[in-house]
Image (cartoon, rainbow, N blue to C red; front, side, top):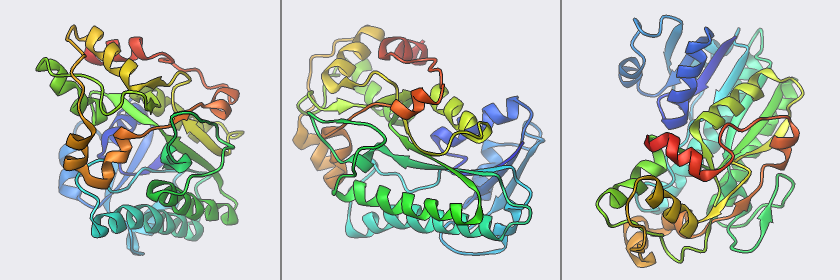
Length: 306
């Protein structure tokens, strides 16, 4: 295959590029920072990879590069859990996803030949937060800021179907691997200061990095897959159980809770990502025949920190 990827230098994107490269596929990286992309993917190590500069929220000559690709994976978006949610930052979070997807769909519509499939990221923030509800792919959306962002994001992706292109939307849970969210959580544990964040009762719907990459590959290649799929492991846990399991795996205490006000002081509105959660089950993902390598938390964490 030849696959175009936005967000390729990010946590999930870089792992996806590594897997595609290892399987001998051609890769087109669309990036806002070509110098950084060349550093991450040096040409001698990635001879089958092409780097094209693009402006994610504007039309341009970059869009013509998508012609001839078999699939497009759209992972780009401003980080949600970093820094305070000022009005400007909230606008950037929304625009990077809504306008970014709009321009990818526009490029696909104008491509000749067209890609066969668009795999578009979304997030389980679509459902809003709850300590008691269980969400599946058919559950209705929430109404907080993140839910509204996901609705707008997905609505733009849906327009690709007007071009006769297959669409798969993956609602990402919290991706666990070396780096990402776990990289930030593990530091206090190593300093013997780890513990549950906030009440500890909030749900933590997670997925191992290897599984999310495998799910993206399945979405690219399995023509029967279409529509929305939850990219989460089938066994979500509560925050207190995550902390306890992480402490056991790295042989550190996990009793020192991180108070909500400390997270709110650091992240502002963005604290909702870790202080509130949702129990999300991947019903359609399992029904698609996807086989999880890491369906349970303890083996997933043990593999990451080994």
